[in-house]
Length: 320
Ligand code: UT7
Image (cartoon, rainbow, N blue to C red; front, side, top):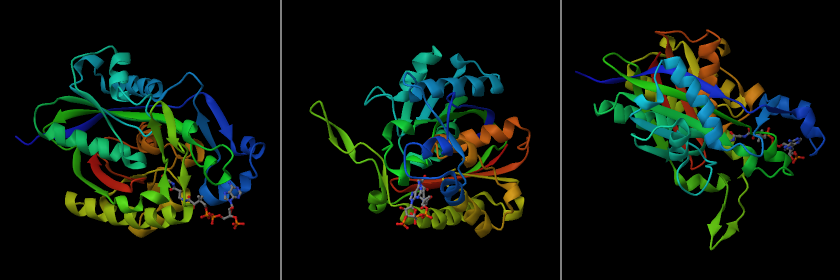
């Protein structure tokens, strides 16, 4: 019997504090008009000082587990995508496992920046297809507010904090139809946080830096290419797609991708206006919003795709 992964439940969580574009006008030389017209962003959520990626992940995971009707003790595997882990180690996935109050499953992090959730979902699907797993928790959780230079108007206006999660269940019907992942490390310099810890000190600059234009062009090209690649692999035509959920970095990148695929914007889920770019959390956050507001329904075809630092990119085609 062929084994498939089905998305049995989704969940998400946004920290309480909202930072609007107007709020940012008070701290850097920017304007709501500039940010909204260049990116589509109106506001972002920012974690409280005591909140870590694992705390946001915990809230999103509980909601996904409730939606799936699965207890945390039934999980066989936890995969968590983050670029902003709680600490160097243990992994944020292990910290999340402890916060969920369970012990008997493997747990590990995936680091693929804004493609992290697509990487984690693809990894989970391969584990599921091995036949050894029944319930896998896949999470994207980020606190980008911790790695931003709040004096750099070119980057600090673009990102936000949040988490999204899905529970994947073993099924004899799809589910996930096809997945495709890519990386090209030669573009690392156009988007990075070039710092680490060494000898008890911070070495390098542990704040996000980006060549916005270069990232923009790269993102539009590869999102178009990988969407077509995963559609071909899943045997779907563009017309079969009910919903596109692209990584939420900039509405102009999203519009360009939709145009290239010939999809009208009313088939595209966008949350970038309210969440800004939450990196590995953006796709599961958008998925959960659209599942809970009733737009995404069972049996529909959804295309998820992400691109981010590394560079990494990938896509997943799924029947809900
Ligand atoms: O998840 C993947 C990660 N990131 C992305 O996907 C982001 C991809 N890139 C982008 O979204 C866009 O390139 C940006 C939104 C970052 C920038 O938009 P742009 O249309 O490419 O603007 P630009 O970089 O060409 O900047 C135009 C001007 C510059 O001024 P000058 O040199 O023309 O005088 C910037 O200094 O806008 C200025 N600028 C700002 N002005 C007001 C840059 N940031 C701001 C700001 N407020 N926040």
